[in-house]
Structure formats: C-alpha cells, structure tokens
Image (tube, rainbow over all chains, first blue to last red; front, top):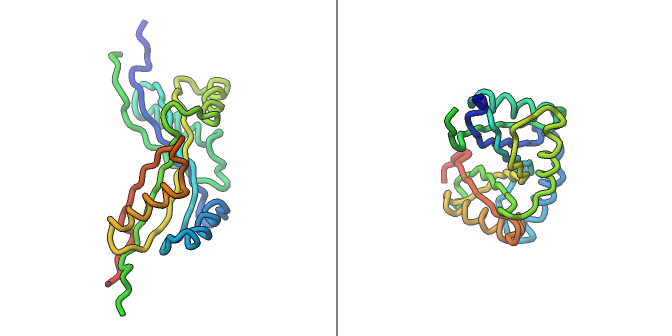
Length: 94
Length: 94
C-alpha cells in the first residue's frame, strides 16, 4: 500500500511573549548591556524557537498539524503568540 | 552636534544548540507527541530567539555589535550556534 505521508517538511515555530507581558529575561539582558560596553540597545525580548521535521501529505497539512501543536501544548496562548513557518525538506515519491 | 546613531535596526538572534549536543527539552516534546495524537514529527530541537532594537550608524555596525553580543554573552559558543538577522526599523535624519 502507498504511504500517504509523501513529503517531509521542516517546521519552525517562533514563540514570543505577547506585547505588554513582562519579560524578566529580556529586561535582565537589557539592564546588563551598558555595563558590558553595549550602548543603544533597547526592547530586548527573549522567545523560543522550536524546530522540527514533520511528515505530511502536503504543506497545508504540515502547517495545520504544527498550528494545532502550538495551540495544544507548545505555547501558552494567554501570554504567548506563535508564528509557524513551513518549508519543504525533501520529497519522496508517493 | 549631529547624533551619529542615525538609524534604528531590528535585530533577531536565533540561538540553537549545535548539532550533536543533547536537547532534553526537544526530546521530551518529541516523546510526548504520539501520546497527544501527533504522529510523524521528528528531530525536535528547542532554541532561543532574542529580538531587540539597536541604534547604529549603519546595518554593518548593527550586525557587528549584535555578533559581538552573541560571542560575549548571548550564547555559549561551546554548545550553541547563533544566527543574526538585521533589518531597518525606521530612519531618522542624520
């Protein structure tokens, strides 16, 4: 029988704190910078970048699964936004 | 006198574990996925995405300062790689 997962997709999920949500990690970096000789840096925000490979029938299916993963457990939607980017990794004949 | 920092640049620094370095956070996500109904996901790696705004004379100066920040304290070069992306945020007359 044919394997329906014909393609492999590389997925990047960037998880960012929503605007207005306090970012203590970013604030700590920002406060340290002038002491280390780095001037002119502001608005430091620290997020996560999750990368993985997904086997799916097409790019839309891969994106849908990744978006669902974000909603279900990769992010906390109360305080975080996420951005999913999908690209073809390699093709395999269906 | 003229302010020499004429431009504001938006900087993204993606910090990734080097290939071959164990990623327990990614491994935990990957192990949990089948139990949550997500199949076909592999090679999960969790990194950081640090975003900030930098005032600099030009894009090259902004990129150089960001690269220097990476080397000095945003990353641990023994186990992490970083990728700096700089884009113009807004212009102000010099």
